[in-house]
Length: 276
Image 1: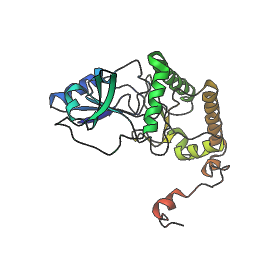
Image 2: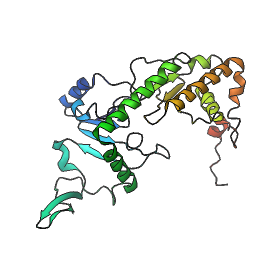
Image 3: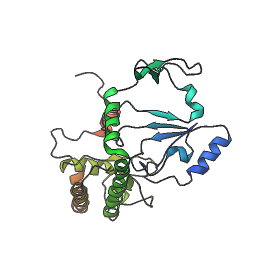
Image 4: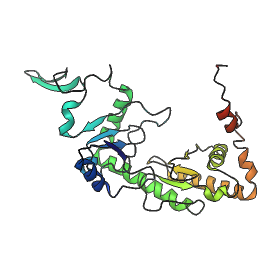
């Protein structure tokens, strides 16, 4: 099997996805969809039409669960009909009797891979995602996708004059800048991320994806207001001016947090592993 994220981590739609699916299927493989970046596709594109056989949906970002602490630890996995008989048990099935419909658990699936674990994930996360979907409806979910795309491209248009943009194109929900230009002044992506904290802005993911040197992965999602986006742009503009005037200032950042910046090199080479 091959697992792919579409759109990819650069925020670009894999426009040769059907060719990829054909190559995989021709040799008897399966195409597995990593649903991490589903939020710009809601109501617009279908993973099944792209040729994916298996889909897991990350409930963070797309379906209202925060992204922190290692992810939500729960989420549905969907498969094409040809794989349904292998799904885990027990299954929830709908029954009918004289009094109406009722649900029960069934283990009558002889080709199932069996029971994966005692419980099916974090029930609070699942219910919240379900309520979110029902509250928005089909039109609302498409608006989520359109807002995510608009927010990302708005930020990219504002910031590409200050940073390098190694991979151009119409982005979907995110885009990746490079701080290579700033590195010539002695300032790294890590320095910029630390300085953002001084302005009350949570730093984006840095140094990922690995194909972009000094990467800053900007992902505003659909929930940020225009005021928040403009504030983020203004803060990064200010930081770029600081780099020109006094790059050493960024090496000391963050300056306003209760805990000072650690020595990353010493922390990696001589970690304190004993409980204090």
